Length: 196
Image (cartoon, rainbow, N blue to C red; front, side):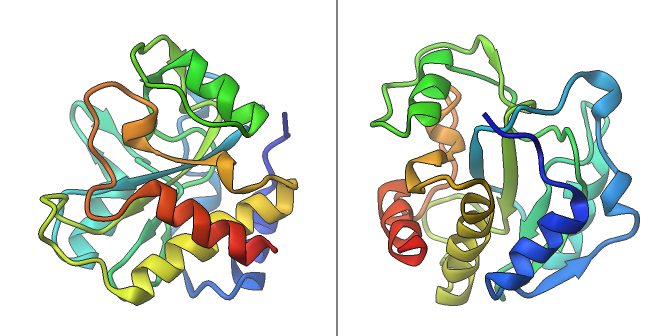
């Protein structure tokens, strides 16, 4: 269990890990905190956006859309490896997921199958949306994968978490497929090596 780091510490953690950061507008106070609590924090969730073009992707993740208001994550990881900070606090990214998965993340143990949607993930996870069409064909440039690794490791390092605290949306909520195009087990291995 962890108290959310401040926005300034979040920025510092990312930059200290070597992440290239772009701050978008009033990201520090752009959140959905009026809809429910944020924290305690238990992990990091990785998504893909099903979008093309960095500017449009950042705008969508910051503003959301009629059915799902923004922010839709804390940081957008672009194809060039830049992390665009679009919100901080509760964000509409994780939705309802499996309480057994949450317990496994907290314990940093192997993940069970996600077969329920009964737990508020927006409260407990930092979220990174990664610019990708999500069709399994759109490439993941090395610089983007490295940025995902660094961003997740930065959060883990701050909280004293290990790589099992990082999950994909597909491991949290039944029916989700993101991120598609690389495996979360391979990403966790990269994060593990970086944290060593």
